[in-house]
Length: 61
Image 1: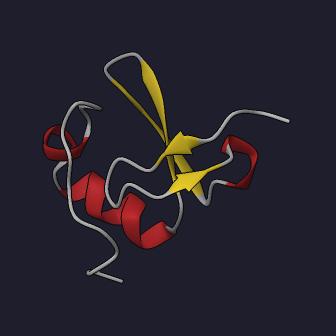
Image 2: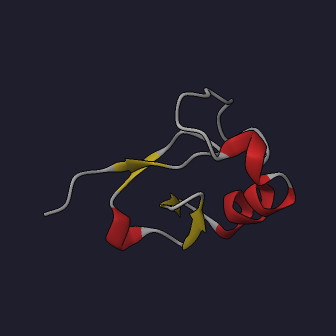
């Protein structure tokens, strides 16, 4: 069983194999809990594409 990864938009921890979507960004694969989070990421990838950044929860869902 794989370790969990964090959705860069909402911070939810998910298993990579359960991700609703993935995206390559700056040489890394990012995993998303939902298509909504993936769409939010695509609108502003540099806002969410850095793991040191902390962002809010699922308020946009």
